[in-house]
Image (cartoon, rainbow, N blue to C red):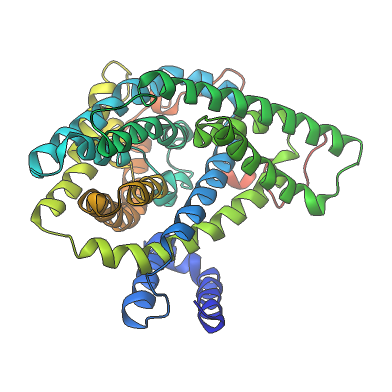
Length: 430
């Protein structure tokens, strides 16, 4: 990519910033726009050539996901998390394993030559969700705050939980006869290291920032970049310790948000803005480099798998996991549908391609097509379905239903436009 190409990409980002709200009202989300622009740049204009971009895209996607996870988690208070612990346990301990199992069996059935390990790779890589692809749901104040929080926390944790399974699948594909060091023990150890490191860094960083803010040691100009670096430090230190870096980033965000005080919201806002820019670039490169490659491998089986992965493979396990949760069938269906596949799945596909080369071509194609379909299906359906669901909840359900239940006693739910943690409002003293 030359200087002129960089300038063209920068211009597209600026134009998107000018018209993002208007395009959003037309259900054209950032991933839809930038995947399409990337495809045009790569295939029609040849502004971005596919060769040599695999490793940069992987690095860009990993860093972006770390910042997205940290920023999303920082807005969830631990008291709210404990209030819905049973729902999260159902979705992550029952729904996620069922989704991986069904996705694996479906891949083995549809693709004869894929084998167990690559089928497991497909099932595990496509199990994590990305709430950012349904931004209209996450920002719609008419959708109960509890439902939005459930989607956010689930998407923050399920990619970290799926990472060890993806690692096992890749190791099995490399050497099916020898899985030493890649069994469930090391996977659980990696999760434990990720949780411990995330808690330690998040609490220490949050308290340090709170103290520095109170004593006026920290400049507002660099506090945001400092938190940006803190999120990256949680990830890299955990990876260095052979832990799960994505889990560490999310847990660190939870801990930082709970310990940094109200002033931390302004600092995390900088992380959100940076992650937003990085996401745009990631989706543009995905459209320019990855989409043309995976499209060449598309046949009817890939399309069938992608459609089923976004519907039955996700929605049926969620429905089974939420039996007894007292959530209405409408809410269960809503939670089941809004499980978009995004950055985590792209990262897993790139890791598999790096480790397995051409042996992973079919698996990567299935993952890539599913993500591509999810970008458009969930992006276009997010606002209308969220509005319809919110209207149904508001018109047909009393406010004491589980969908509206306050997470903890004493908490007041405010409209986002009146919340005290808006980044454009002065932070209240700690």
